[in-house]
Length: 195
Ligand code: IMP
Image (cartoon, rainbow, N blue to C red; front, side, top):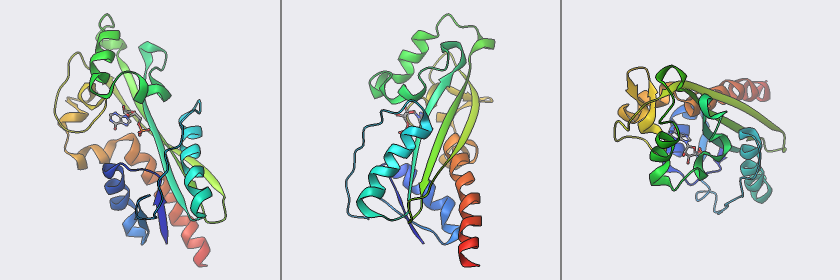
């Protein structure tokens, strides 16, 4: 079975390939599928945005598609930046902007979670969405050099996400969790089709 991952992000592709290959599922990039899509993420939830991305690809190829949409929800900011995580500030200033907006928030109130919604559309056009979350705390300064986005200020226990190796992060992250939830769903789905 081949599934297209609706992304141009190499890290997401690598992660999805690691998770889905034991099922005999080959993950294709948009480029592998010979398409180029940049859909507008104008939904109000992660699940809506994941579906928007997946449908844009499905309409072009009518093959199975996975898409994901993620963001950081900070309790002290009423869930912001949430679905606006990528647009909260220019990419290189995301952490600085968040730290500045939380400079008066005490340690106990700095709880946050990353959320990923993953959408899957099968070859017949049936859609499902699943979620993965990872709870942590927003630190007071940037730490570590790995990862991207808000990783340097997202504290998972004693370390920031940017201080973890990619495999360590994937094992606990929102995206890893959402992909693994989809893995479980597909395992049953694929088995049912085989029976
Ligand atoms: P996307 O929908 O997965 O592309 O994520 C949207 C935005 O959320 C990204 O541009 C990042 O700013 C933020 N984000 C999502 N996942 C992560 C993560 O694992 N670490 C840090 N930031 C993330």
